[in-house]
Length: 395
View 1 (cartoon, rainbow, N blue to C red):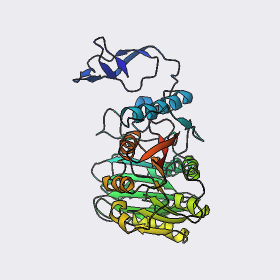
View 2 (view 1 turned 45 degrees about the vertical axis):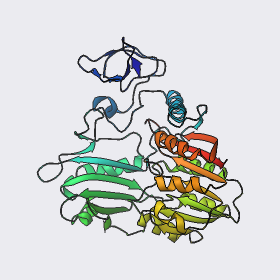
View 3 (view 1 turned 180 degrees about the horizontal axis):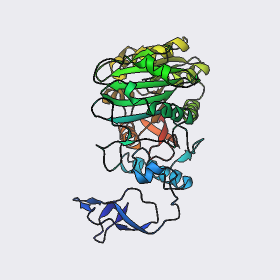
View 4 (view 1 turned 120 degrees about the vertical axis):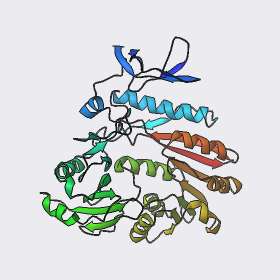
């Protein structure tokens, strides 16, 4: 973010704090209160600028990462500032920039990658990522430097066998599960994936591969490989190690929960519920994803799992002593916020994937709650995304 000569703020992608730049001729787009433009030339590099190691970042303008051109310390400082500024501006909170827990790994941490497919006659012409400045285009992916080596090894095996995937292919997701099996989730709008077993036999690998077909308007199912029960299409943190750190800190903020009823809303596969059960709590975990709930129930019988939207079942749940919420980026449903403010609980922990919706929800909750602590966790190095945990107590 910089300023034009008329004082107007201008947003320029891939710049760094302290950069002096010339804008690319013809790229300036003026709006009423701000402007957007692209870099034409870096006249003087800021102190935090580094050379991005991924060729796709520079050559293809890959939109998967946003901060590879910043040194990691500068990335962490930027994310702290983003969270703090957002909570002050949108949430109206009097709060300093929070502490941030740095990533365990700056690279190769993702246990999942999703790629778009560019259509063509027969097999897809390109499977890869979107450039940040050309969202309708797809460039072929050679390697993703933030994705686990094991998934990239699988991708190398797949790249020459795209014709064996269902057509017309719309999206391809690769996922690593907790037993190190590799999952291929192929999404298509056409006929079922009939060549999945052929693909498994064609790949020269010494690890287990599970092939899923995801119809555009239907539920995914296993087409080849062992049906392990692992919900490969369910939400799960793509940075498992950092996800565990964030969840454990969040649960620790509740204090002693022995014998207490705790709600785990938007609980997914039950990772937070497992920590709460470990602490002696009686846990009610709610999530709309039936596959995630079924898997959580099978591995954690001590907790009560409910497959439903949180806002639809709150009235039927036993009164809680504490609540943990981990909503999608859209934040809390209004009915969930209303229930938590109309009947406050002593402690509420909010695990957020988006500072803006966190700020909005904290402003709604501040009627009956006080924010006691905020901590950020860098689950997504090299990107602009950040996980934030806010600890609230009833006022």
